[in-house]
Length: 362
Ligand code: FES
Ligand SMILES: [Fe+2]
Image 1 (cartoon, helix red, strand yellow):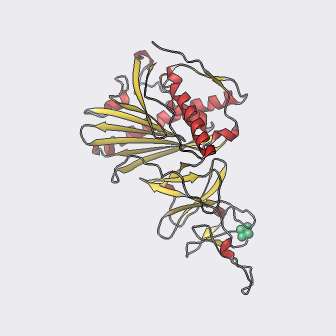
Image 2 (image 1 turned 30 degrees about the horizontal axis):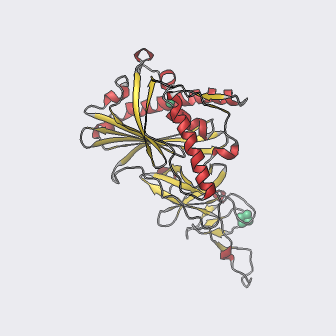
Image 3 (image 1 turned 135 degrees about the vertical axis):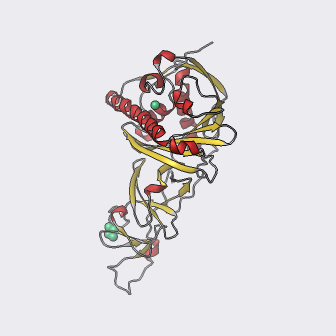
């Protein structure tokens, strides 16, 4: 019944193939961008400055002053909300339009508003800030995709965010996130599960617009982590490119615990992981400390193995994706390939995946 599919022997993607464009990426948690502050980030090798306008709405500009290229994030915010570059004091509003060049004599002819720092589309959703990375950055980029839908009720409270940098590129980071087989070996701990309790798992998957979901099911009986949640528990896990995993846990009739893990490529060798945790359940507030340290331990275990992996990848070895435990990793590459083809041909993206049942032992 089981099939090995030893079809994919591969090397790491060319750097040109690593990052998908015309998609939204998680930039930072809302709490990381306070009004009156500028935050510079590198996302997919592009330097971006984030700020909030006077109404509190986030914006993002290319983090180079159009004059000589100094990072605008090194400048400061004026009372009128403009960014002033630290080098010659040029001012830019939140749309990136140049508003003032202090050294120009007052009767100088010409329209300085033609000078623009390119602007990235930004969206703020449920305590998270996202940036749209276009294939070509022009002064007025229009996103071809709507901002991500986290499938959260508007009132659901963000309880916690954990951010960490992984020493691996986006592909290895994503695969590490959706790979079921490492769980037994990397996340072995007395309070989570024990290697002695291995079980054959059968999971049903269905395509979703830009990825796939593991259909709602009762969590595995050998996961003690779920046992702290009393009641009728079921979970549904969504994965979407570029690297977002949403886990919706339902408890009883009306309660939800939602964990969202996002991966944002920084450059060709590092990726930022953010883990957001939402809950409608009063008990999670006082079960909070154990849950938080459980999450921290879990991510810490992944980071530990990612450092070892990064060492191994230095010599660019040939790698394998084998059988049903690696099927989700193969799907990820298929989704990427389709996405890129659709962007290149200017056609609509069609998810190449079909509903499938996968088996693995964890
Ligand atoms: S480099 Fe920014 S004002 Fe000159
Ligand atoms: Fe893991």
